[in-house]
Amino acid sequence: MNGTMDRTEDPTVSRPVESTANRTTTTRRPRNWKTLGWVLFFLLPSAIPLFVFTLVPMVSSLWVSLHKWNLISPMEWVGFRNYTNLLTDETTRRVFLHTLIYVAGYLPIVYAGGLVLALALNQKLKGRAFLRATYFLPVVTSWVVVALVWKWLLNPTNGLVNQLLGAVGLPEPGWWTDPQWALPAVILSSAWKDLGFVMVILLAGLQSIPNDFYEAAKVDGSNAWQRFWRITLPLLSPSTFFVVVISLINGFQVFDQVYVMTAGGPSGSSQVVVGQIYDLTFRYGRAGEASALSWILFALILVITVIQIRGQRRWVHYA
Image (cartoon, rainbow, N blue to C red; front, side, top):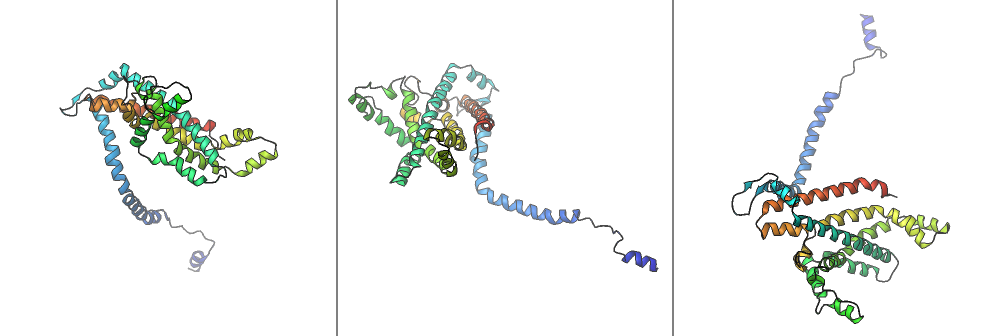
């Protein structure tokens, strides 16, 4: 008996350790479910509108794209016929071409202009805050207002732009009344409106670059251009990447300014993809084809965005 007591009381004798896995599971699981419940509760105010106004319309448009429907009579199932008809339609190719031309003209102008403004307003200037607010003002202005103002400025007869061009002896284009100048007119107005947005993003990127890099470059004898090319542009690449992605997405979805300034004319010379979606739905009563065209545009934007995200590893540098 003494031997038994000695073995029991001996601290060197190993004792079976009570497993705490069950206790941990039973004590943490209610807490995790309670936390998840609170998270879902606070997400409901934003999740419900997202579901009702975004996810449900997306799924509905996908269903509509598989039907022939004029918004009045019952839908008729046609499968993927709407997609095949659109992909072989000359009008579809033309509106995609116009959209690509718009993006190719809009993106360089809005980025270069925004970069110049950001570099200028990053300097110590008098009234710098006022100038920043002034250049950003068009961003918060309605697209309809901006388009109407630019339609007046680019009026071929009595527009201010043509008056200035004529005063210095330059040709006076027909702008939104000329098939060759209608799309450039839309590009010009779009770039002017979005300059402030690009400026703010790039300005934030410039202010995040450590000043030590510039001081070290000056000590090494680098001039202003070398500092800009070797320091500013590489360290500004994250902001540039964001601007390019957002501008491309917005560019492919251009509609408001085209609808107000040219309505896709003259003779369809400025018609873009979203404008064609609108016309197919409300002018021609071909909602099925319009939904199919919207999904084709969505697929194109998705592919381009994925390519950009994967390609950023090669040229985006983080300080």
